[in-house]
Image 1 (cartoon, one colour):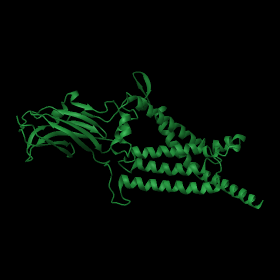
Image 2 (cartoon, helix red, strand yellow; image 1 turned 180 degrees about the vertical axis):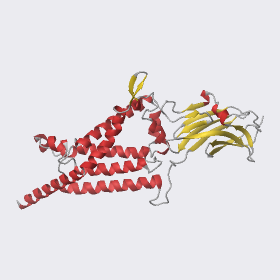
Image 3 (cartoon, rainbow, N blue to C red; image 1 turned 30 degrees about the vertical axis):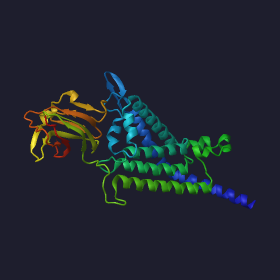
Length: 369
């Protein structure tokens, strides 16, 4: 009897402690829920615009420049371990649309669940998964305060705390589900909704999830930015654009074909190319195209890997051409006037940006006739 009394008292103390903790975390639960609710409703409710007299949710319109999947092409260069799945998704329009709707519905459900305290622990667990996914895809981005990383690690910590505590008295779970005889006969309901967990389990769960949050924070910060075990450095630069040039080939008349990929830089801007040059072994200019010549490229000279209206692309500008972060294309530059190409000599192909940045690659030689 004494032992039973001690167990009952321990359970009561645990229940009271979780209830108080849940009350303390009420604001945290609501804020984390509202973040997801806000993301979903901006697409579903609050961002409608009239297009040809018809109101459309532009963030969910595949043919609109504001389609939300644009963020995937921006994020692709720095995504952690999931670049291949993202690229595969971006090459299948039906899969893109399905993914966007699945993510939107998940955000909506998790947001409502956390704000209302409905299926609180299940909502917190899905919230934790969503934040880990956000880190893998977008964690490297943020031109001011490591914005995406900060949001993701905060979300993991907040979701972990809410999962342990549950919804507490100010939740639909406690008000309408916990009092039912069905819930009281089924201990597993507490793992989905709210309510007390065994004292030993609560203690271990709190320690494990705290450890996960700390490890997740330190590991991702070290991988993406250093400053834990190494000096501060970005794994992928989100301040300045970089263009990777590959598969460059030179024609006898000075024409050039190459693949270009904007694999770094802020997603809020683009790299603006205003000159393309061929340099010989001495560094002298053998062929050159200025901004006007690049701006006059024919539409089929730039073949974007993601030709959607919303995707990161290379495109002609009034002077030269530009590429947003994540843009990938096969580009053909016709021979410029006055090109002086010597057979058998190696050349370097150079792109110059309006801000002075340069990107180059060895292009080889034209075979001797």
